[in-house]
Length: 338
Image (cartoon, rainbow, N blue to C red; front, side):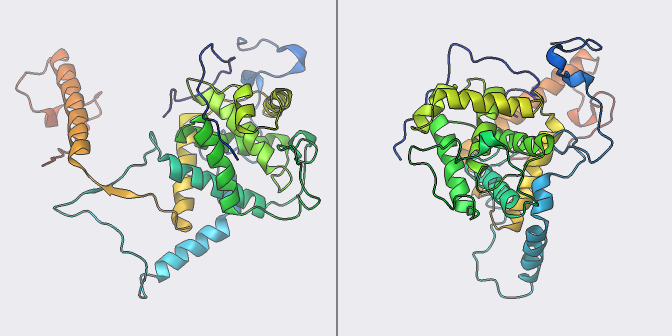
């Protein structure tokens, strides 16, 4: 999953950074922090509701806010099994053809992951329960374009397609990864929890921009600089981007750590959301080239276990099926690719 299982440090950009595609349209435990700002290790857990961006057992906020849509979607899909379904039949594997979903938790499909994240943001805006705002995210106070916004900019909820177009433009231009999209959603929900604000029509673009800006710097090896976003959003200034990043970090209390278990939870919740909204991840036939790559990877693992077996004193002719891994007694099934 990206470069690390856990993102726990924030550093300044290195000398080399990602090429932008132009578009038209630590403290030791027990020590006190300076400036009365608590270090992550000093914070006590809240006895109230668990933070979904920190606790892998807590439900994600977007799943709670899309609960009705998910239930309706699953009921609709269930009822469709009892009536004639006019949609194309679902592809299923057979003896002659194997269909594989190319999206995994370690390598998500970029296009579908961005669509799912945009859908989660859509439900955040649609089902918000208040109108709490912070000035730095207000698009009227800090417009992203020279033309500004109209008088009713905060009256109408954006559609899923509009949110997806905005996020996709940033990801395509900055060449960001699918993992970065998931981290973006984690930071967005952490901001809503820590700062006690709501994402609304008046601030969603700047909140999403701040989350993407931070996620790209923490997650990707080659960070996108703030000045690079000024090449994507032509009318925004570097000073505005710097201030947005600074205040976003302060509202997060500089907690940019994302445990691998939390990352996995968000990934699978996004897949559940996609299934309920008919945003299926595409399945492709297993090609000869990909089969050879899978076979090569399995041979690498086989050689690895064989080397460990010999190192631990097993005879060279011992079957790999009888080898225990770390004493756990795990028996692995043999996969055959013809």
